[in-house]
Image (tube, rainbow, N blue to C red):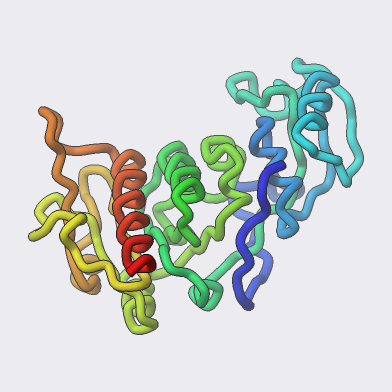
Length: 264
């Protein structure tokens, strides 16, 4: 069964409902087998009702999911009406509240944190969340504005990862970087014009890695607050990666560096 999120410290509170994340008078509708499975495994997720086909219920049971909410067996057509015909729901839709909001104070035990400076596409952010979980990051940080709200598209794109890692939202990314630097993190921004390759950059014992949107990159005010700028050099004919691919490569390099320091 999907693992629950890593424990963090204090300071949790419920996030206000947001347009696109949930309706004004109801919870989120999370869909897809991986997404629903992870939501049931997450003690932070307040769940209300599961709508599923018989086949989806059987598959969830095979994954060890035991629903702790009312279950309504239904048809794929009814689920299409709930979440839209283009949604790949795989026969399962879960009504649930948004996750609690987390802040800087919840990162006290973290060693590897990924910050996304105004990355707006929910599919990219979802893919990055999934990579962050796979590579052992402790949290992903986004801005409150110019970033996707928690919602069905983000949750589905993350394939369960939204319920497996802390998602911190901050008002001011430049100020957040300064706070993390002051608390002992080595703060590194990816920049195609960075003076050194990421592999050659000192990462310290705790790292905040900052990535920006495609095209604009990390904003100047955020870059100026970082300890270092680093680049990813590509050996092939295409010199750059999209942000989700850059994130997975950079996280792998940082994770390898942290493990190497731990082994010393």
